Image 1: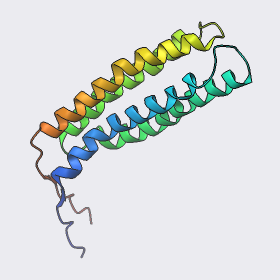
Image 2: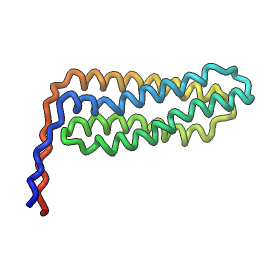
Image 3: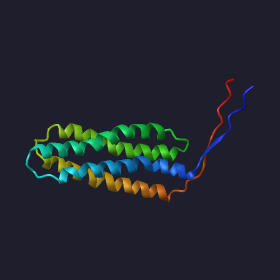
Image 4: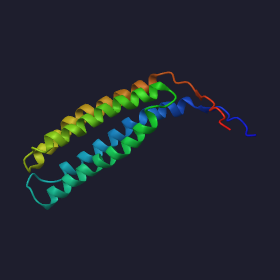
Length: 152
């Protein structure tokens, strides 16, 4: 006969950290993506193409990684973790979706990508920082994960 599973606890610190994770990833991805866009001149050439690729790669990598973070945290035992994760996802996925739609019609000049990045960074980064501050100000408590029934 097997022993019943013991109840597990998720610490308050772990809950708050999980709630901030999507925001941290977004801030890093958006910041790193903008750096190569401003290291090249406005002339279209090999350097511009490489800068555009280097600007897109962090966004694409975080797009994939963020899906994992979202899947892990959206149905967290503490509902606030899911809420903050969902809000951060709405922002990031909206801007990345808009980049696909709008960026398709950009002329082959780095200027337009710089402007898009600047607008996205000026909206996403402060909003993510604001969420992190809100998460830090909340009173987090340990969460008990209920015992799973023994299906013997």
